Image (cartoon, rainbow, N blue to C red; front, top):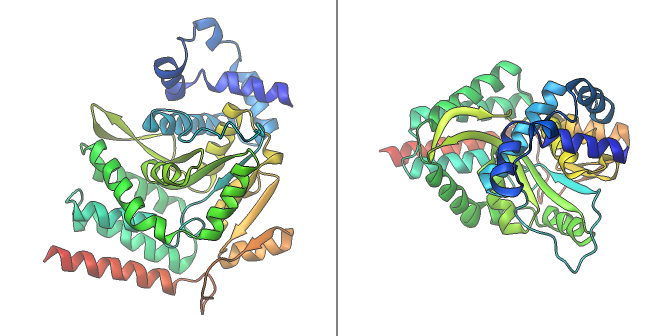
Length: 337
């Protein structure tokens, strides 16, 4: 299996955005022979056997990881402590919303971007409505995800990359850190103390996760990556939106690149939508789970951790989040006047 992980790592670094990143910033250019070392058929078989996904999905994951690395300007945001012996094959993957922080990072980002006149209320309205609908129903369909992706890309097209990064850093520093669940942060610290990598994996823009990872001393962050060109967003996606199976694909690619053994890895999430990621690791943990994930975790004998200080009347239900989203909507309308 270790030979197979090495094979996939070599194949992965020859692909797409990640290959260009490595050529430009990390390694000497890879020659044509090196690119052809792992044939597509052999790679497809290795991906299927190792991760249970097809090569096209794995390649999307490679692009997502490569885009995240390029956005950060490096592979790992925080290097390991040289005083701590490293467990090179183990890592922990953390969802962000309601796992690491209370509430929706997307809503906090939207408020910050609106305050900076980066987006308008009409551009923001569809995202707010989708958040309400998702929290009420507890699920999202493929059409909603695809529509949301296109709307988000259209909103940022032609806008400043530096301004978005600055807003993300400001939101993390001023709001998200104080909304973090200290128990979750302590869990991550335990993994770091054990010499393991800690990665945030979220559907929100990768800049949010990377700002959080930098402040909290985590290894890095994977997230949804919008393509950049000459300091502006092009309106195109790099890889896939990291939602549901998208997280699984990105974690598989990261595991291949870092030569991680997923049976030695841990994943944490609050949502049933993250089941593909949770099921691919040796130790899945439900944190502040929604009702469907709680039921599934109990049935599977998974660990369940609830760090919410007040139990909701409707457990993991819609009311508190819907109220929060409605409050954000009222705040934005008031600011517009």
